[in-house]
Image 1 (spheres, rainbow, N blue to C red):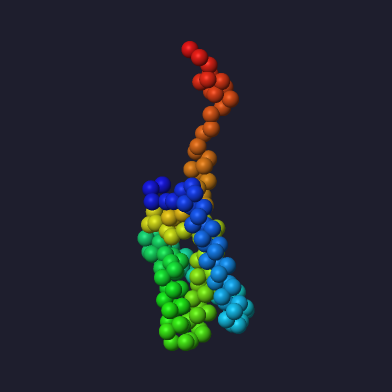
Image 2: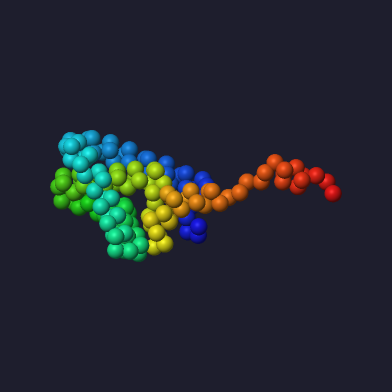
Length: 148
């Protein structure tokens, strides 16, 4: 798939997601905010899936808006600038969610559909591609390796 990261770069981006999630959870623990709030809000960005009810383009747009670090960083900056705890909590929960998703391979979406992400294909589309790759049989390998 054009536009998707593969190989070592994909692995680095997924490890980066683990790091962002861990750092966000660690920072949240130092904030002294409620863990009940953390766990009840952790999956809120996934409400952006509802955009797919309209169509794939709207779904990709709404998903990407909720799963980009832009909004989370804006919350963190507002919190630091105005010394408010609520935007800090929101930003840390939000960035933890995004990092968690990225660590699992859920990247930003393309308009082709939910399975098409900047981190590669996911879900059924990924399984279909891997199923369509035919490995050579031992007979083919034997025939191909025999000298003419």
